Length: 271
Ligand SMILES: NC(=O)c1ccc[n+]([C@@H]2O[C@H](COP(=O)([O-])OP(=O)(O)OC[C@H]3O[C@@H](n4cnc5c(N)ncnc54)[C@H](O)[C@@H]3O)[C@@H](O)[C@H]2O)c1
Image (cartoon, rainbow, N blue to C red; front, side, top):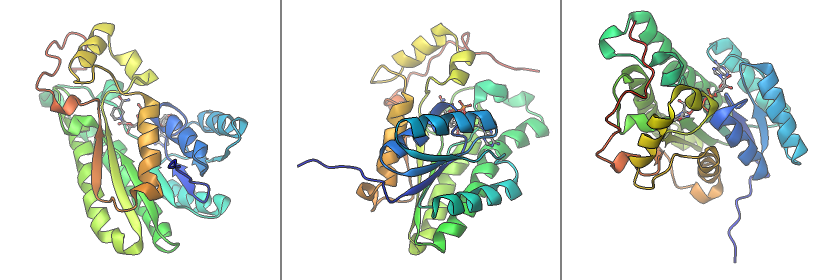
């Protein structure tokens, strides 16, 4: 006997899926049979991932939108529902990574820096979750999955705003789960460890990456497809009794007492 994950009746929206982890999530949901809306701020990215999925034999639509704008989010979710004929899986993947702009000594934060990161991570995700929950609650329920971060379980220096914004998402998962469970909506989070996306590769030195690998019990960084397959499982019927949790997917980094101590490999903005 084999156990199969079959999402052929599912309709999925993945935010920020034109690159990185989101791209892989959209591709793997489509491989499991779901129809997928590929959203990204950059239209060419959304279109290119959609073409990839269609070339593989999957079903996908590109809907570019800026998920920081609540009106655009409402339109994205409504349009996704209409174009796919439903919405049963939503993955809220967008987040500002620390190496991007936010890696900063705590004492150097100004109000604008701090608010920018909270808006891009917590507020954006909450607005997406609100629009998705509204439509799902009127149409048979579904699964809403947020991409959090391993930073919430093993904090590192110079990363306070990012870590706080992602920890708030972990709590949002629990609040939404208790409120929306009766409407048939499961709410989950995935907390990835360092994953080698282009953004991460550009921001970390080789030495820093080696230190990260050495600091995990499994001696590895997390691969995009490992996260994507976890999300396929969580979205599926196999996980139908799970809600209100965030799953740490970090090669065991959270168990390790030794964070890479040498900060030389990090690029820090201390202006
Ligand atoms: N890469 C890692 O090591 C890592 C570790 C832990 C958690 N995460 C989390 O995983 C998620 C994805 O990270 P990634 O590394 O794949 O990021 P990425 O920067 O590689 O890709 C993010 C995508 O989202 C799009 N995007 C950004 N803002 C948007 C907006 N306002 N509206 C629509 N699209 C927008 C970007 O254009 C880009 O294509 C983030 O939430 C991040 O915090 C990443």
